[in-house]
Length: 181
Image 1 (cartoon, rainbow, N blue to C red):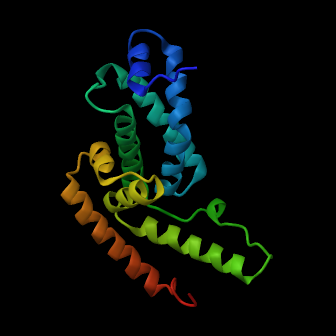
Image 2: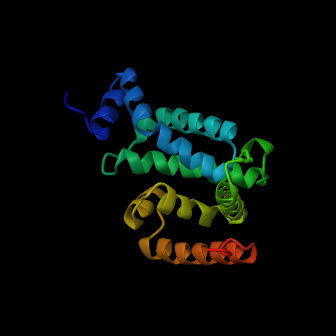
């Protein structure tokens, strides 16, 4: 079976084959959901925002510019949705996000505590920095792909990521993240 590239599928959707949009959902839903979870810190909110991303993508599909990749275009929509949500609603730690304590041993508990601390420090960051960290380190995008998705020049992406890493490092150090390593 020959797999169509994203632009071919977008072309089909724009020209009336609405069912082809499911292909794009299948390709990107998990990735966008994971990004949203890390951006907003709440699974249910992330699911809602992910759904909103695909609704907006479908509604705006006619304006898609084929010079760009669909991947970058839908990531831009997702980033905007997450940033808009975080600006409207302050970040709080929901009880549903607290990881259960594994009684398997102190190493597991320590790892869970570090993971929770890292999430809290990420959520303390300004959304403009947090999104870059997530795109680079959680989604694995290159600087060029981040530039394509965010419309921020590569030099500025590098500079902001440097600042974001420093903020994150200082927050983690002040909370004892690196002790006993």
